[in-house]
Length: 117
Length: 118
Image 1 (cartoon, each protein chain N blue to C red):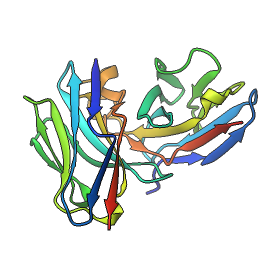
Image 2 (cartoon, rainbow over the protein chains, first blue to last red):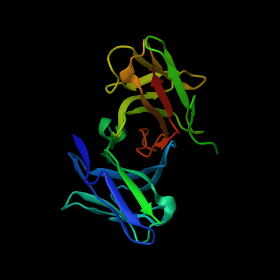
Image 3 (cartoon, chains in turn brown, cyan):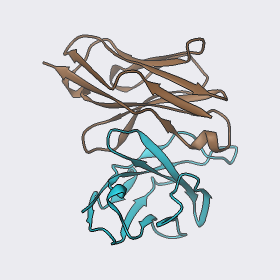
Image 4 (cartoon, each protein chain N blue to C red):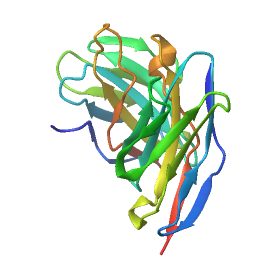
């Protein structure tokens, strides 16, 4: 079984300040972890993924996330927020191995990021 | 290289009508997944298909919902006799086949179809 908890439903930051979106996961197997971004009325775009290689993962648009097994966390960060970062962000877990756990992506409820000019 | 395509983007139906949602996977992808996103919720897995095969439909409601991925043409998610509770965004994703023959767990999403049931 696997689950994802996104600790904040809404985060608001000023433009140019750091972004931190928190995610904790639970998985019976070695997990693969992803962050997706969804802009209003758009599809989901993959920001970054962790698949048991380096624990610090760099993604697109300056985002990165660190896999911490001891804390079962995969928080998303960005040093400096931009207005275009305003969107909803989803943390996703799946199994790194084959079987239903590997393709049934389990989504968190999402965190809406607002960026204040 | 076109991404995952879904149509229509918006669909309005009255209670009791049928809704048909279409999904064309990315070129070279042979695995299709459907997810539903209810308001204020994350996406929930519904069904996983390969060409002419339903691999896993454990997330599909037992009644009124069906999915297919024919040899030719797009994947179709069909909802019969829609009810207000079916109003949601329905997303399709596709993935490649892995070297091991299984599904890659990196899925590419389409823009979704927003279904509104009046």
